Every structure is written in structure tokens, then in C-alpha cells.
Image (cartoon, rainbow over all chains, first blue to last red; front, top):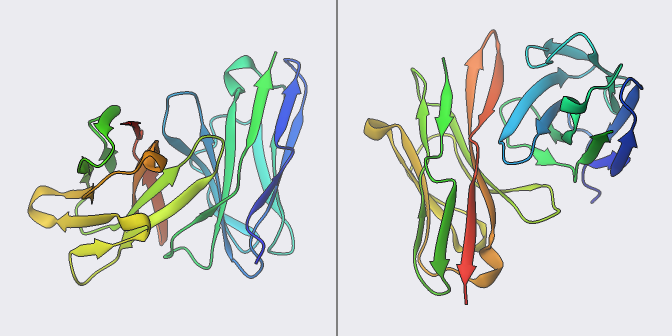
Length: 113
Length: 115
């Protein structure tokens, strides 16, 4: 079956612009996670959705970052007024529930120039 | 605070040699434990997981891991490494906090395999 998909695969943007990153989870997966992976770093947790609600937003690094999930499916991560330090690979994962393993998408590589 | 430590940033082994990747965690109870692999340009793929029961867990691609409660460790092993195992390996723990599970990943171990 279809896995987790993310779009775009690559995004180059100028400093100060807003960007939207999209994640399509596996159908039926209620849990959805966003992570950020910087060069040489591990995965940094950003936000977790259970259905459409986000019980854990503790990882969002600043108020420039926001995310939503509609219909218990697609999620969008928005970064406003991008900065160079936002450059990273943004990974999305979904899971049948919060107590299961996660299935990861291929990621979106964001470059802020 | 909960944490995951992968003390080896890089490991190089010869093809056919055995492999052990270390993972230690800090948490007051037994967490859910996972190993993921990330091949170049790919997303993360689950190798194996431990929730409860037998502390020796078998995974895909010939990998296994052993949970040792006394050492707060979950080391990944493979008896004979193949060139295709070259990748980055991440240990992760799932811990219960504020009614939901939170997942903490280690910083990864990059494996290089020599022919």
C-alpha cells in the first residue's frame, strides 16, 4: 500500500519568505508526527497530532512555526519569515496510534538562502 | 529529563564482520524501544522494536537487539555485516508523558562497511 508521502521533496526559499510543507500519512493512521533533521544531527521532535488535535506542540522552536491537520489526514507545517537556521530536512511520520512504531516519509529538504 | 545516547557517531567495519551499535537511555521506567535505519536519500525504516516480553528482539535484515534493564541499554547487533548495511542507524525511545507518548531519537550512528 501507499506509504507516507511528503511534498515538495526539495524547497529553496529566500530568507523572510513563508513556506508550507505537506504530509500525506498512511490511510487510517491517527497519529502524525513532524521532525526536523539538521546536518549531522538526530531527529528533533516538532509536533504530534492525534486525529486533528495536537496534544504535544512542545517541539516547535518558535512562533514562526505552526502546523495543522485537517480531516484527520493531511498535515501542513508552515514556517513564516524563514531564517537560514531553518534549513534542514523536515520529516513526517504516521502511526496507527501513539503506542506504535512510526512510518516515515522521504522528507522535504528545505534550503533558506 | 529523558534522553537517548548513541555514543558512537561513526563506526567502520569490514564486510562479513560482526556489528554492535550501542544505545543507552535515561528514563524512570521501561520505555518502548526502537531501532530505525536511514539509507542515503531515504526516509527512516523500522528495523525492530521492543515493547515487553522477551528481551532479545529479532528484526528485519538479520538484525537483533537486546534490552538490558540493568544497563538501560538496547544495543543493536548483526553477526555478519553486508555492504548494503551502510547507512545511519537511529535508536529511539517512546516515553509516556502528559497522557501521550513522546518519542526521543538518538543522534545516530553512521555505519561504513569496507569491502
